[in-house]
Amino acid sequence: MHWVLLYRTVVLYLAVLLAVRIMGKREVGELSAFDLVVAIMIAELAAMSMERINMPLHEGLVPIFTLVGLEILLSYLSLKSHTIRGLVDGAPSIVIANGKIVEKELRKLRYNVSDLIGQLREKDVANIADVEYAVLETSGELSVVLKSSKRPVTPEDLGLPTKYEGLPVPLIFDGHIHYNNLRSLRLDQAWLLAEVRKQGLERIEDVLYASLDTDGNLYISEKEGVKRKEPAG
Picture 1 (cartoon, helix red, strand yellow):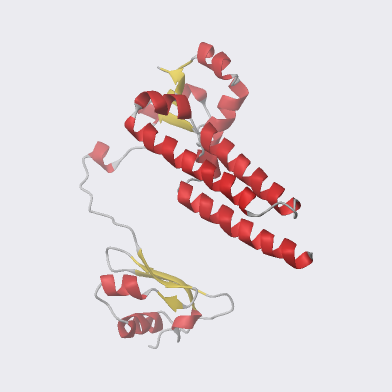
Picture 2 (cartoon, helix red, strand yellow):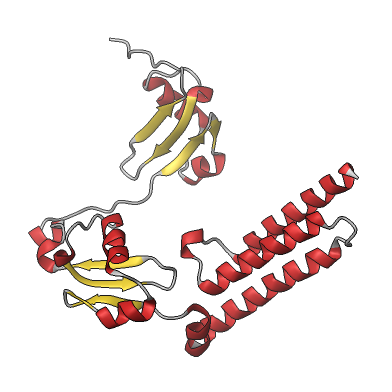
């Protein structure tokens, strides 16, 4: 009996994991109401299938992947139709417009001023008077546009030239070289080891994480307990 329960748990775990991967990469906070309902139903079906050992396993798997198929179908239809997208995901709501709280919209959403102020603080906005527009997205996330006088000054505002900044390329994860990234930069292991040693570490295995930015600067974070040697001279 215990082995049966273990087997069913492993199979259902892998099935739910596969179902979530198929549905796409989205954080829980970014799920629409429809996605959240599907996720809850899948979790409930999996739990029910694990509890009812006498129920054939396929009777739990079929509904799970039926829901996945339905979610994918509606997601595809939402891409093609604005009407379906509105029905499935809803529409964003403007809760602050031209610096004024839209009270009518708050009442419609059953969203009070305390909630609004709390979410503004999460966006590092302490004063509601600094906000030009605030939009409550369909995921429940609050998007904020500050008044022009309250926005951080950018180099463009000052007329200063800027250079391109790409993403740093990871080269070492937990003591293991990411060879694909190394090859894409037309570098080799010998170069990497030499650079690691220049920064006072003897082995690649001593490095927790290393990355190379677009200026050619190598960032290295050593593993806990590993000490860097002082450069000679």
